Image (cartoon, rainbow, N blue to C red; front, side):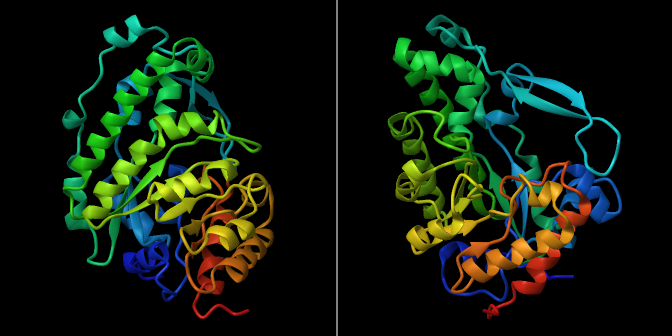
Amino acid sequence: MIEPNFERFRTMLLRAGEPDRVPLGDISVHPLLKAAILGRPVRTLEDQVAFWATAGFDHVPLEQGLQLTDVIKRQSMHEVEAQYAADTADTQVRSWATEGKGLITTMAEFEDFRWPDPDSLDYSAFERIGPLLSSKVKVIAVVGKVFTCVSWLMGLEGLSFALVDEPDLVTAIFERVGRFQYRVVENLLRFDCIGAIWHADDIAFKTQLLVAPRVLRTHVFPWYTGMNRVSHAKGRLVVYHSDGALQEVVEDIIACGFDGLNPIEPPAMDINAVKQEYGKRISIIGNIDLGYTLTRGTPDEVRAEVRRRIHDLAPGGGYAVSSSNSVPEYVPLANFNAMREATFEYGRYPIAV
């Protein structure tokens, strides 16, 4: 068993040379896979801590923010039951975002909307988990979702039309969502158990951004710049996650002050090119292909891909292995284990080249 140590993850994010080994970088693993590794369902904070340590991670992720409130989870999403998992014929339920018009389509609906209070969210998990962690493990707090929450509340189609037809409405909603998530980050920074803030906010698909760069520069990136500034002032590191083709805004993401970028999704981005161009200014996390290798490939193919990524990207530090999105239920357990075990085998410094 690999001893968890957040210092190696911190060293990777800071690009402060080579830690003892390449860390694992995922922050989302489906409960079915967690249970298979741990040998029991993951129901409690104690179970979460045990899973992430057993699986070889240096952190325990915990999420908080507007995306977990009823206005998003119950009102802006719809659930679909189907057979998603790779290792069982049982069905599972997934939540999907509204693509057309969302809950807020007019300024009147915005003004009547009942927004939750970020100070009234339940932060007790962050209080309770501290004593459960070993002295070398930290929590990664998952927030983000500035663009995503707006697109869920308006619907992506509704947001797209409103950018032209009702720009004041778009500005008002981004302001409200951004201010909410900013306050969540301020509240989270009170907890000593947190070592980093992970901002997950999908802004692109495989060929381009979902909206023009100017929209992100006006409404989204300033919030991350502010959240990163207060996080760094408290000694916490920050990671940005978005799927898709980010080439137009990588410089903006770096300018926001992010320490790490995830997941460098193939084939949308060439991770070797990203590392070469930006690797001295931001660490790189991810790229093990969820489109084929992790989901439809063999364990040997997973091992080979992990070995190539480590060989190409890990020398000198600044790289962590993770999936190219997350580890959902349709990843076979054998492939998830192959990714982890190959990281342990090939990721010890100095890297064999």
